[in-house]
Each structure stands twice: as structure tokens, then as C-alpha cells.
Image 1 (cartoon, rainbow, N blue to C red):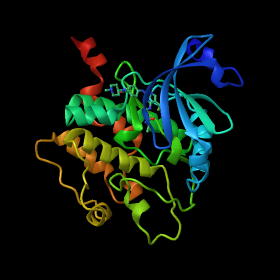
Image 2: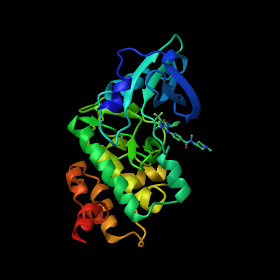
Image 3: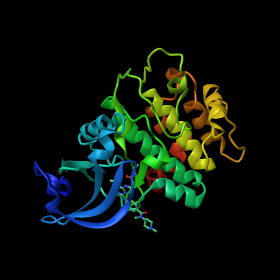
Length: 284
Ligand SMILES: CC(C)NC(=O)[C@H]1CCC[C@H]1Nc1nc(Nc2ccc(C(=O)N(C)C3CCN(C)CC3)cc2)ncc1C(F)(F)F
């Protein structure tokens, strides 16, 4: 639509942008608010130093993949990548500016989300993941830190550095928290890591739990977390509603084939109860 029109030139360069305040630091670089001079289009400019990513052990491939995958995605709950350019030392990603910042900061501040808010976020995540999976893109790194919030409170999946086009059976060394990893990705026995889109269903279950409880279900010492994930050994506090418990239990299933498909997540009673206010208003 028109909104994207301003940032559709074939090539970009730094002079096209007025750089604003820093928004924070990402994994591999800083992010600034920016405005494209001719169109006044507001965006976020992520600056990555080639020196840092060249010796980051395969990080360059991740950045290339992030650009290739994210620039072809268009969904209201997926952060847009409008373009990229580079100079001698840096790579610049021109990204959608998320007006309300990082979801995990809101979660930490509020401790946990009320069920109606968690259900709306999970419904938006399910819609975004359905879109990704239809394009055979697996995100593989769904967690609060990778979700931003738009000006209207809608959530936007970001950071496609770990996403892949399925099927992918190359061994990837994952770093960072174990909390969100599904059993099939931590089981060392399997000769090759055969990831299917189902890994995102497990992470959606972990995300639902963390939105409602305020901490992930298998949080423990790394060794114990490993064991508890492998057994899907979690306890859901009794104050969580039975519908929410039901959805979490249908996603945190060891057998990837038995996890609730995204279409059924969107039709789950817990989601419908909180997300189809439109119908309810019509009834009144
Ligand atoms: C998914 C990925 C892993 N995460 C990231 O990339 C992070 C790393 C650094 C920032 C963020 N990246 C982005 N952030 C925004 N918006 C934004 C961020 C922060 C605030 C905020 O709360 N402050 C400035 C506050 C204001 C108040 N003071 C006190 C603290 C900072 C407000 C809006 N839009 C697009 C991006 C993107 F992704 F395009 F780069």
C-alpha cells in the first residue's frame, strides 16, 4: 500500500536518512530511530559492524538469511524489513519502527499479563506463525525478547536471524536461553537436527505459559532445564484458568506431530473467549 511506497527505491544510502535517538542495542549492533528525508518516513535503522559479524562464527550467514527471509514477508504481526545497504565497515538494515518497543520489557514491568491480553497476543502470534509456516519459514527463536510492540499494542515478531526455510537438517549451534527449545532440538541423540515447523508450536506453548505465569515453564539450572524439557515436566499454577491450561498442555507435547496445529490454536476456547469481541458486541 501507499505506506510502504516511500521506502521502495532500489538502492538506499546513509545520506537518505536523518538519524534520531538510539532505541537500544541488539545482539550485533545498535538501533536508531531514523527518518527518510524525502518522504519523512519513520523507520528503525539497525547498524551492524562487519568486523563483529565476520568473525562471529557464521553470523554473517545469519544476517544474510535474516535479510533474505524478512524482506519477503508482509504481515501485520511481523516486523517489516524495507531494505538494506552497507558502507565499508557497516551493514544497515532499514526496519519497521515499533512504536511501543520491546514486549519483554512490558512483561517484566507488568510481571505477567492478564488472560485477555495474553490470549490476544497468542492469537496474533498464531496468525503470524501460520503466515510464516505457509511460506515454509520456521522462526525457531520465538521468545519475548524477539517480539516488539506496535503503536496500537499489536505485537510484531522480529529477529529472523535463527529462522530457516524448512526442511533444514544442518546442525546449528544455538546460544542463549534453553528455556524455549523444544525436546527435538535439545535431544543430542538424533544424528541430524530435523526441524519441522512444529518447533514453533512448542515455543508458542512456552510463550503462553510465560505470558500468564511471568516465567518460563522449565526454568531451572541448565542441566535441570534440559531434563525437564525432555520430559515436558512442567507444573501450571492452579490459578491459571482451565482453558489456558488446556491450550498450554496441547502445545507442550513431546511428540511434535501431536502438538495442536495453529488453525486449532486460533479456534481454541481460551482464544475465542478473549478475542472475538466483535461477535459479542454484535450480539448486544
Ligand atoms: C527484536 C529484536 C531482538 N530487538 C531489537 O532489535 C531491539 C534492540 C534495540 C531496540 C529494539 N529494536 C527495535 N525497536 C523498535 N522500537 C522501540 C524500541 C525501544 C523503545 C524504548 O522502549 N525505548 C527507546 C525506551 C524509552 C525509555 N528509556 C528510558 C529506555 C528506552 C521504543 C521503541 N523498533 C524497531 C526495532 C528494530 F527491531 F527494528 F530494530
